[in-house]
Length: 153
Image: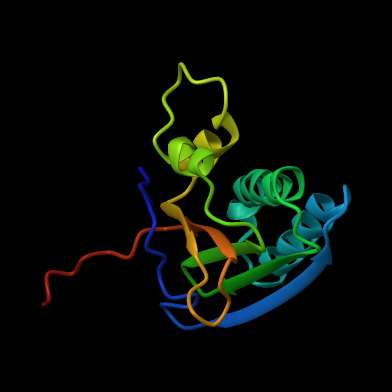
């Protein structure tokens, strides 16, 4: 079960390795991002996450390509032993339609791709990239196994 939020987790909250890929905003951006994430998951032995990651990264990068005039699409990936977090940023604002898609129901015509992300991810969301990058939007998702709660505070 996942939840959508506008507050992202830290890009690498549980340690591990971080990777970045910057792509021109072209029709091939989704395939390149998908292949990049697939390679990282193969090397990090997260073979069980590959299919879900491919669906999610394709959806998020395709949305950036289709719905923003950004010249570059940036893909940030953090991988550790339990999870992978992918954040895709573009130079488009967090549009009202994206915020509506965060709350999209099954009856809505738009936002269905984000519903796939919702169903596959442990968590996901969208936000602005902050003061350092005004006007930049980030859509992120985390896949993997939940961290067990061992009862210690």
